[in-house]
Length: 325
Length: 285
Image 1 (cartoon, helix red, strand yellow):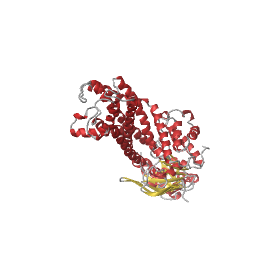
Image 2 (image 1 turned 180 degrees about the vertical axis):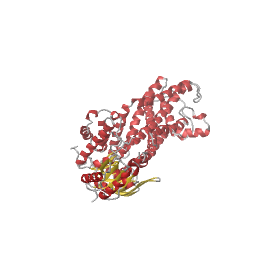
Image 3 (image 1 turned 90 degrees about the horizontal axis):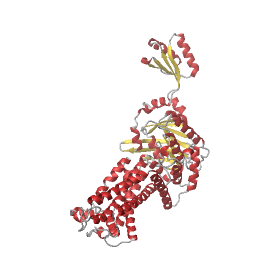
Image 4 (image 1 turned 45 degrees about the horizontal axis):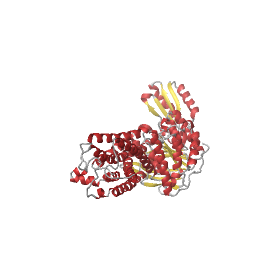
C-alpha cells in the first residue's frame, strides 16, 4: 500500500526549464520526509504539484489515499499547506485570518471561531490575536501561517521552507512546534535548504537536485554513503606530512587525502575515540608534532557535496524563481 | 498540540451554488475589513473624480458646445453622467492591483489549496470593490449637487429613474472590475497591475460621449464612440437623469441606451468572469 504521500514520475516543464524530471516519493503515514536541495532544485514545484496548485505534465500522485489529479478538491480537504512566504493577510488580525481560513475549509462560522481561539492559544499568539498581522514579527507570522495550515487538523501537511529567513531563536521555536505536531501522528513533507533542519526534523531525507531525487534514506544512511568518520590531522612542519601519512595508512580504512598547503591529512577510519588516541600515541612516538587533530563525522553538507558535486547553498536565489513560476 | 488528531473537521461538500455564495461572502468580508483598515485607499479613490468634477466644470464649462448650447450650466449637467461612469470604471485598476498583490504575497496559493469554490476569491474581491464604488458614487453625487448639478434639468424624471441610473453605473463598474481581475491575474507585480489597469481606460472613457458631444467628432471616431459600451451607460444615465446633451444619433446603443447598457455590461461580466476564473484555476505566484 502506498504511503500517505506518494508520487511517481512527476515531470513539470516551464518553457525550456525542466523543473521536475521524474520525481518519485513515498512517505509512510505518520512520518516526516525532508526534501532537501538547493534553490531551483525542484522542491517547491514538487510541493505545488502535490498540493493541487500545479498540474504536472506527467506522472501520478496520491495524497491521503486520494488521486491528486483526479480529485483535487477531495485532496484539498485533507491537506494543510504552509508556504515560505507566510501567506496571511497583513491587514487582518491573527484571529480574523484563522477564522477566514476555517470558514473556507467549510467549517461553520461558530466552529471556525472556536478553532481560531484554540490555535492562537496553542501557538502563543493569544496576546496578539486582535492586532493586524502587519504588526507581527517574522516568527509570529510564520507561526500564524502554520496555524492556518492546521485549522482542520489535516492528516497530511506540507511545509515549504518553513524557517527560511528566520533567526536561530525563532527557528528553534518553530522546530519545537513542528516536532509536537508530528508526534501527534501527522504525515509531513517538509522542504528545506538547511541540512541541519532536515537532520533535526525528518525521519527520512530525499535529496533533490535538478528536478530529481538523487538519494533517499535516513540521515545516518546518507551519512554512511560518504564513508563514515574520518581522522583529520594538521602537522606542524611540512616535512612531517610524509611521516603522518604513513601513520594514517596504518589505521585508515581507505585512501588518505593530503592537502599540502594546509599541512592537512584526512583518512577514513572506524573505531572512534579509542582509535584517535592510538593515532596520537603513534604520531608522538615518531616525533611528529601536530597543530590539530580531530575525529570528524560527515555532515549533510558533505553528503550533499559527495552526491551532487556542488555545495548545497552555492546556487543563487534567482534559480528559485524558475521553480515558482 | 494535543488537539491534533487524524480526523478532518470538514463538512462534506455542500451544494456547489450555496457553497460558492458562502465562500464569496467570506472573501468579500475579508476585503471589506481590509478596506476599513486602509481608509487612505478610499480617500485617494475619491480625490481623482472630485478633481475631475471641479476641473471639467470650471475649466471646460463655457467653452463646450452641447447640442446648440454653450452655457456652462448645460455642460455641468451634461458632464456628471460621464464623470460618474468614468469613476466606476477607474475602480477596476485598484481591483487588479489588489488581486496582483494577493498573488504576489502568496495568498492566492493559500486560497487555491483550500477546498473552497473556485470563483469565490475573485467574486468576493469584486463584490467588495463594488461596495467601495457605491460609496464613492454617493460622495461624488453630493459633490456634483454642490457644484450645481441637477437631475431633471432637461425634461422630467423621478426617483426610480435616478436610482435605475445609479444601478446601471454600478453594474457597469462591477462588469469592469472583472477586466481588472483578469489583468491582476495576468501581471507579475501589483505595480504593473496598477499601470496596465489604468492605461486602457483612458481611450475607452475619452473616445465616448462622456465629456464631449460626439456629433462634433470625425465620422469614424464618432462611430466608435457611439458603439462604445461605456457610451451606452453614459447615454442611459443622461436619459434617466433627464440631463442635456443626449445623443440623437441613429446608432442602436444611442437609441436604446438602457438596454444597450444592460446587454453590454452583462456580456462583459460573463466573458471576463469566465476568463478570470479560468486564469485563477491555473494561477501560479
